Length: 215
Image 1 (cartoon, helix red, strand yellow):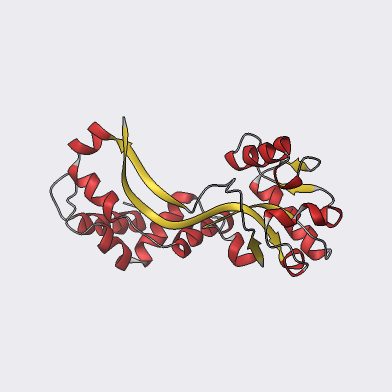
Image 2 (cartoon, helix red, strand yellow):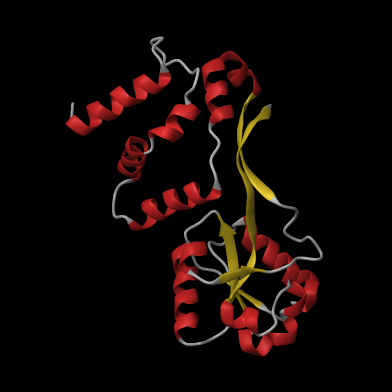
């Protein structure tokens, strides 16, 4: 049995997106895609096989929703898909692909999410913390932390960018960011105690200092 402990990031998006050339060509909705099938060469670019987004695209193709019955899903990976976005943009070609935010792709590319009249992708989504109900009831400090662990989409996009593109290990990315942004960690750890009973924010600061000194 699990329960939603907190909404950590509000108003996230996962849907089909197009580049500026396609957007300016009149593709504003999923319903506009098939009218411009030739410009897209009948291809939608996705990520790893089995991903939820890919499955939704395959369902649209199989059910001929939005007239996409004769389209093809090109499955790859996140990096492979974005490499295709780079290639199409550089070549002055149209592309439609599975996009989401928060992610650094929204800062790198002029990309536009398409309207979804049939609600294939559902309503506005969000990032939540889910936890075993009994576990979270027995760990009040963790519950308080998760409830206060709220951030905006730009911060999460920055994290993803640093993990993907900085060349640093994720643990180092996290430590550097926490060290440089105490105004966030103070809010997240307000009223939270560490396992030894000390103030949570002070315990984090001490830990980061020890990591920086190599102790």
